[in-house]
Length: 116
Image: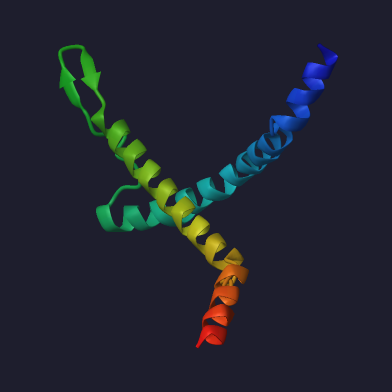
């Protein structure tokens, strides 16, 4: 059983998953601050309110607060946009240069040149 656990830890990618999770959790406050301090004030300047939580319909004694859904959707779209832009910038920064022709391609080219 101990050996199975060692195999699980070493071969299962648990360490990489843990590191990814920790980094993702550390990344959450950054994204939240960008959304809360930059994007939501821009939305408030355009629409007039940073939050739509006050919107709702009263039916008898109940209140249907559809404004919370609108605020959550705007927040979700904003967070998704920020993450998309950050991933796009990261991918551009870390992109490897295009590799040249493979060894097979070069050998084929040499063979064809010698055949002529």
